[in-house]
Length: 620
Image 1: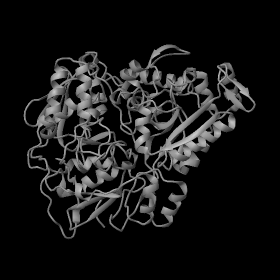
Image 2: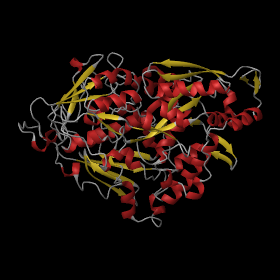
Image 3: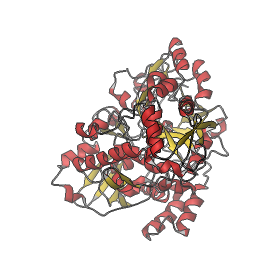
Image 4: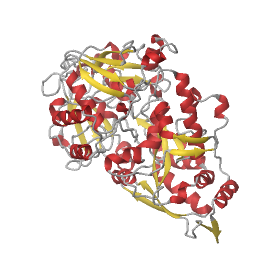
């Protein structure tokens, strides 16, 4: 699925007004996506009200027991739990698009149109002079227990963000409730991505999290460090917090009684956001990764799934009447290397050699057919968006690392490696022997890892394939319990490259692995390239700061060139969805292939979820 990024807090105190000469307020709003909000679709919906049965289901209203069938992995209790704060592991659902139906955020985003559509919020505004961003909630919103949704819930949510080292606090310095529906965010570091963090944060109930939010706020205001004894304890204790009964604001809620290893039901919450616009009374979610879900799709028990399906399965789906939707994922699998246990990987020539060994077109085709496209730019973010941020001249400096075994050999020899028979040995004489760890259940990453291992072995490495369950693989990588591992590069969370670099360089590195007490791959972010020394953390953080796109492009270009040369992780290919969609059984229809909403990343602003909210995806 698609990972998210988190980070430690930080602020440089620079003011927005310093940039005002470089960018007009109208342009700022366009950059933030505010100018087009509410123009159509979801924006035309009114504040939430009770769902009303509608026998003919016109306009997407409720109609009897209409079910939507989806699929996404979840953790069954007791391991799975209902502490769904960002950054906490083993929640019942993590990174799932269906969370937007349970804990909606302030807005959702149209990627092609580059605009937001308000959800829990009714408006938002930037005050450049006072360095604040204000979000106004819709009036009349309620939690499933009947209590009102207020600005205090938003403040509580962002206090938890601080406690869990979320990226929003890279740019924020404070958050306050001005009144019952108005939240004022004080900006420490101006950024065009800050609004994304604010408007796309699922809002959690203060009634459930108040104890932890209050303690976090006290520490934050006392300027305590999360690396202090007190900070670490609160962070660790909070991750053990287990709420019992979900209190939600979305149009659906969990029904714990129905949860089994194979499926669970989300039941209609008539008090939830836009519940009256959604024509389905229940969402049934089938549990598991691709190997579990493939037969369920084959049986037509699923209407839509975002898993990476095997090429043969995709062809069978089509013959059984499914449409295959191919939205860009803006991400893909990469090889992550453990720099602590294998210091030989710290030599950039070794990493470059590995890139030259691999035929990434073969790897993507074997893994995902038409939906696995080899990376062209190897820049650390999607090839689709590279031209928006990197000039033509600088794009030509990016090495494509097309397969070249001679170059790979030269680089390894220059790094002091030698061949012993047909196998490589390290400068210290030890064999180049490594495990490659991958999630067994991922039908695309599994063959990607297998094919990469086979290619490297043919070249003279000694790679042992280690498939582990997907629920264990991520904690292992965070803890540094791997040699080489498959994890995601890039990000589906937003088109801005900053989010991709958070995934590439922070998420499975010491920057954020600290949340789980590990160091991840432990790749130092202070490096030296052919252009000179570079602090990648500083460059990446600056790539999202300020409101001047030209300045951001300079930092993004610097990060792209450095990533391309250093290859801290080695991207394999860029994934496009091969999402089966079944029409005419339970769902009337899905968006047409040429609908711009199919440019939305399926794991961020999922077009099906947005279509349900808008009443455009309706029961058959």
